[in-house]
Image (cartoon, rainbow, N blue to C red):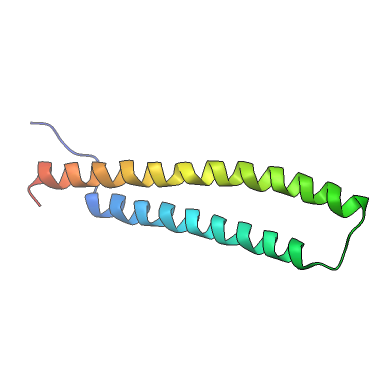
Amino acid sequence: MPTVHANPDDLQRFAKLVRETEKQIEDLKKKINGTMRSLDWDDPVKRRIDQSLSSILTSISTQSKQLDAQAREIEKKAQQLRVFLGR
């Protein structure tokens, strides 16, 4: 008989943590963008930093969106385990 080496409840909690992490990343991104826009600062250094930060934050955002896909996959596995275990 096959055995299961995972707990669906643990997987569900982990998926929730992954989703919360994605939200925190997006919230921090918004905070950085908002703060940068509100600064009373305009010179070549600021423009260079704006461009660099924009690129970094876009990359981070792209990566964080993958967290949602991972959370969905973890939740799917948790559901499959519940069915398998009859819960």
